[in-house]
Length: 91
Image 1 (cartoon, rainbow, N blue to C red):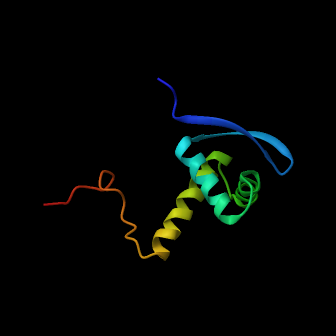
Image 2 (cartoon, rainbow, N blue to C red):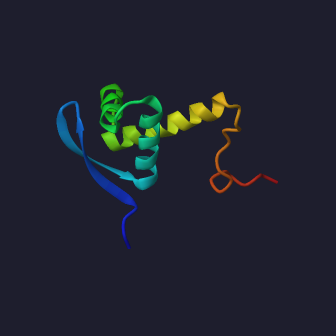
């Protein structure tokens, strides 16, 4: 079975590096960069420069999560977790 994690080489702050992310996160990074009018490399460079700890892949995942949580809050969407992830109601 093929791994859902995709490793890609990108240039960040003038240095070539490899980043492993699930395809859904790569798609989200591309969408966010397009929406901001910046390259994927520039967006990831900004994420890298602002991360406090952890590896770059984790920082990117957290950035994408925060981006969509912020959008959901701004549009008034209900930011409740997906039903399959939420705890069952207590009786």
